[in-house]
Amino acid sequence: MEADVVVVGLGPGGEEVAGKLAEAGLEVVGIEAELVGGECPYWGCIPSKMMVRAADLLAEGRRIPGMAGSSVVTPDWSPVARRIREEATDSWDDTVAVERFEGKGGRFVRGRARVTGPASVEVAGETISARRALVLAAGARAWVPPMFAGVPHWTNREAVAAETVPETLLVVGGGAIGVEIGQAMARFGSRVTIVEMADRIVAPEEPEASELLTEILRREGMDVHTGVTIDRVEASGSGGASVHLAGGRVLGGDRMLVATGRRTDLAGLGVGALGLDEGGRGIPVDGRMRVQPGVWAVGDITGKGAFTHVAMYQARLCVADVLGSPLPDADYRALPRVTFTDPEIGSVGVTEAQAREQGGDITVLHESVAESARGWIHRGEGFVKLVARDGVLVGATSMAPSGGEVLGLLALAVHAQVSLDTLRTMIFAYPTFHRAVDSALWSPPSSAAKMAGA
Image (cartoon, rainbow, N blue to C red; front, side):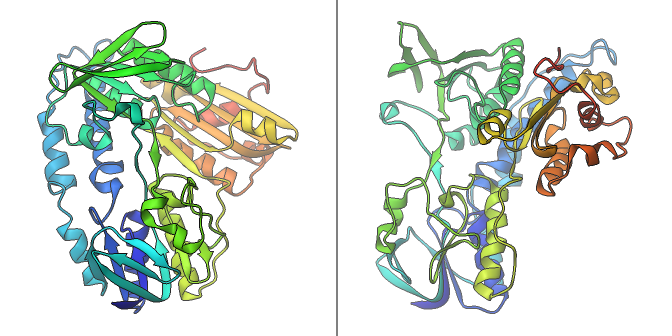
């Protein structure tokens, strides 16, 4: 089989590339081993946020006393499971997505592809050659450390597909996936324990965010352990597991969620045929997603951030380059990310520690969300933190109710290299959560500035 373009992996980035190039009139073959659309619509972004939304509604119901009367909240996971199954995933059936791609003129091949040369792949015993472009978008999968092999466990996929909430849940890993699913299931009645090997949860975020989120999770009844070493893992009960920590402590659950990150499988993809390191964490690309002449890569396998919005951004650049259309090179300076806990943690650019390591005249400004009128009205917890170099905003964190939405303003400012002085001339709508940004801009620049909830 031959085609103008062969796209390996039809997750968010690959599907976008394949669909747009097919619409442009090129002959495109799209190859996917699992579900067209990838992790995001079936296990990641969409269904997990359905879980979070439902859990947030329970939390809001429990906040009624003292503000709006009285309430009795009775959790029921069945509507959540039903919505995920019927509304989000079609019971994990990608027929609609396949038909959408084919409707744009693409040819779909189901199977796991392996690169065999600069312009060819093999799938299901058949060689498919690309006349114009080979695009690699094979994504990443949940990484489970070897010590968990043979022990019953969930990854995020099993957690999202769960029909019931376990009575007790042991979460190994305190990153975004672990804390989001952990908090959601705790609000539905599961007794949740989080075990994190780093010295704090959500370690890529500012330390203030880790500290406040730990406090909130513990206040909600979750057990959070950080800085631990796991000596061994054992099965326990019917489908449960326990971890034995250094020092002798044992923690367990009726179910164990392993949320220890995601990794690419470059060896399985066969990138050695392109002269690339199959043991690497990602495929090196230039600013237009080129790997080498005739080969492009987008999404998780580029190592630029395992986010749908990164894959879609890179897909736009890849499509433009294949078609010969001018677009600026990729710029990740203002890469945003959101952890959808309650409160949300939105961040963009560099952290304070990264900024100080990079050098320059660093200014750090803080403000508690509760200092804004909207934050006070909501009894909201969180903070805004601004990091500037030589007076220009280079990083920011918005931990607050709707913190991810407030982040939009800050991401734009980092992207456009807006100065603190320019931001101080803005008019911020009142009363809104983003008024905390205005307050932060006028706060004293020092480590002693007001912190979250202080």
